[in-house]
Amino acid sequence: MKLPRLRTVLVTPFGLLALLYVVVAVKFAMDDDLVAAYEASPVHHATVAIFGASGTAGDGILKAALANPDIKKIHVITRRATPRIAAGVDSGKVQMTLHMDYLDFSAIREQVAEVDAVYWAIGTSSVGVDEKTYGTIHVDFPMRFVAEWTSVRDAPDLSFHYISSSDISPDSRMMWAREKVRAETALFEFAEGSNLRVIAYRPDYIGPTEEQAHIGQNLLYWFFAPVRSAVRATEIGQAMFEVSARGPQFDNGDRLGTLSIIRYSDAYERRQAHEIRPEGDQKTGQLP
Image (cartoon, helix red, strand yellow):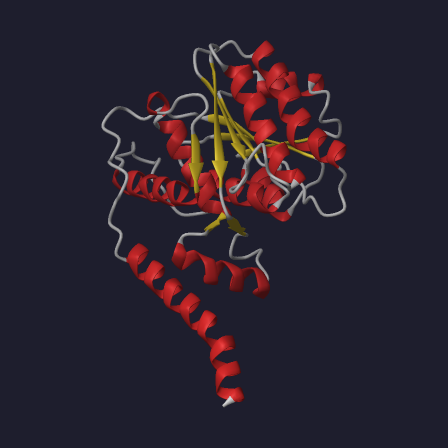
C-alpha cells in the first residue's frame, strides 16, 4: 500500500495544477470582453522614437512600427544594428542613430526634438548585476532621457511608453522588482502636471518575434499564452500604438498588465483593419 500512497501524493498536485490550467485556459478562450472601438479621431504620430530596438521587446516594437502605416519615420536610438534595424533603414522608414552614453542625451537632441511618442524597451536581466548597476539602467537612463527630451520638445501632449514588469512591489525581496517600481514612480512623478504622460506596461513573459524566437522560447510562450501570462513582443508594440492613438483616454501613471496589453493589441488590429486610408496609403503587410 505504500507505493500507491506515494504515487497519489506525488501525482495529485500535478493533476490539480493541470486541471486549473485547463479551466483558466478555457475561461480566457471564451472571453469576448473586447476593448470598445475608439470613437474619436485617433492621434497619429507620424514620427516616433524607439529605444532598445536591438533587444527582445524592442525588436517586436520595431517590427510593429514598420508595419504601422500611420508611422512614417522611426528614430531608432541604439548601441548596435540588427537585421531588422538595417532592413528598416533600407526601406527609408528608419533613421538609426548609434548612441553609447545613456546618461547623456545631448547628442540626440535634434532627433528627439521632432517626436511626440517614445517607446522605451531598454533593460537587462538582473542575473549577475548589482543593484546600483541595475538601477542605473532601469531608473537613471529613462529619467535622464525624459529630462532631455522635454527640454527640447515643447508639444502639448508627449507620451513616454515604458516597459516595466509584472509582480513588482516596493516591498519585494527581489532587487529588480523594487527597482522597477522605483523607475515607474520616478517617471510618473517627473511627468505629473506637465505636458508629458508616462504609461507603464507590465507584461509577464515576453515572447520574441516568431522569426527571432528559438524553440525553448516558443515552448514557454505556447505554454503561458493560453492563460494570458505571455505576450509576443509585437503585441506590446501594437498596444503602445493603440494607447498613443487614444491619447486622452489615458492618464499619466496608467499601467497595463498582460491581459490589457493583449486587448489593446487586438483593438489596434481591429482599428487598422477598418480604418479608411487615402489611395496609395493602404496597409500592404509587414516589413521583415
